[in-house]
Image (tube, rainbow, N blue to C red; front, top):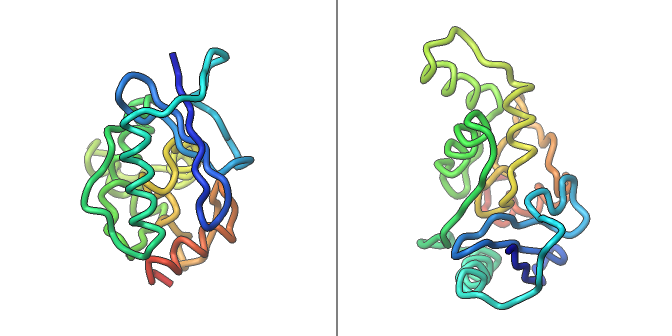
Length: 164
């Protein structure tokens, strides 16, 4: 069973999803790939993992770096999970490029290079926005490119973190 919970952020409504005791999704309502981890059978319910996620989001939207994380279950392919692990390691208030992520994966796999487009596709499919900070990924020139929640939300999140 998948459960959902709603949260009102300063940037708009957010829907969270969980199964068992782990968060499986967090999306701005209406964003690209909204509900990508939802099944047809879901129910709205308050769960402890949602309480933890709400506390995390409250702390974050007050401009602080939360020092805790609810349990996460991202699913995804092996490649996507590799990319998402790199995203989780991007420090609060910092950014990284798609190319830098590709270089990290290429090095780990013993390859000469990795497609920035493949990385971009995996970043875009991140099912747990904000907590897995895909908004901290920028274009090669530092430009704000591609964010499933929209560029204005990406700009607002990076501004909140004083990253831009």
